[in-house]
Amino acid sequence: MKGIVFTEFLEMVEEGFGYEMVDKLLTESDLPSKGIYSAVGTYPHSEIITLVVNLHKNTQIPLSQLLEAFGEYLFNSLMKAYGHIFQNVNDAFAMLSSIETYIHVQVKKLYPDAQLPTFKVETISENQIIMYYTSERSMGDLAIGLINGCLKHYNESAEIVKEDLNESGSNVKFVITKK
Ligand code: HEM
Image 1: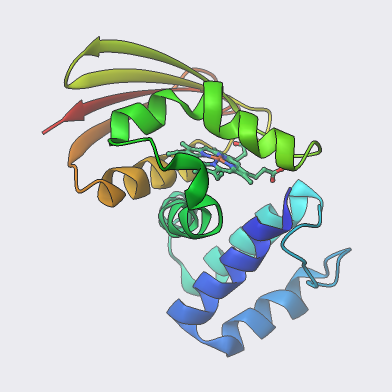
Image 2: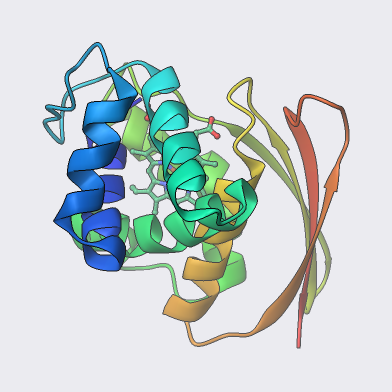
């Protein structure tokens, strides 16, 4: 997993819970990287799971809620870091429809070792799309947060209904309906 995911996660924890919590998580988590992340480096995916699970243990906030909140935070960070890529994307559905065909394609060009999910998007109407998420990393809750971040970025409001299509969470369906 790319370092930017870790640096942003630790920044969110620091903003929300203070540096003591960051320190506590890194001490408790016993990470191969020792918690030293560079934005362009690559680290085991298991480390982000360990960090989120330990944040959950320390705060009692449900895992799904932590991942969603992180997704929203991460969207803003990604826009700051890579906003130039999307200058021509003008609304949320256009962005969501172009993750697979454009956004993550650009990410892969920048970082050939990036591990990205697959999205299949069906446009139902002007106000509704269905996204099918597939990833062995099973980060559907992170995806909801990223989608929420995207909607907020374009000042749009929509209902997102998530349906797990298998037990592991590697296949997830999102029905997104504009309000
Ligand atoms: C709403 C829009 C987006 C959604 C729903 C989305 C979804 C995701 C998800 C769920 C992951 C976690 C990996 C996995 O599940 O397999 C991911 C990873 C990632 N995405 Fe996106 N993404 C979005 C927009 C973006 C944007 C705007 C960028 C910036 C160019 C970006 C760059 C990345 C990067 C760098 C990773 C980490 C890859 C790695 O760790 O190897 N994504 N994305």
